[in-house]
Length: 63
Image (cartoon, rainbow, N blue to C red; front, side):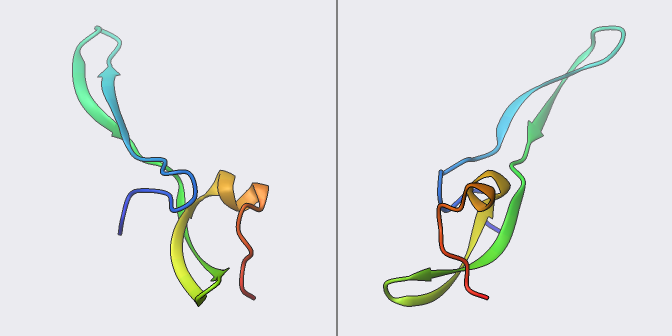
């Protein structure tokens, strides 16, 4: 699965997980991507979109 949104190019970001004792370990935050079918000029296409792009209606979903 690609970890990038087709609409807004949202990707995973990295940072530190911080324990109560303030120990730092590296971690990643993944975007909430869903597989949807959209209508393009070439026809129907299956892509991964983040939930924000789905909710705002940037793309026409195929039913």
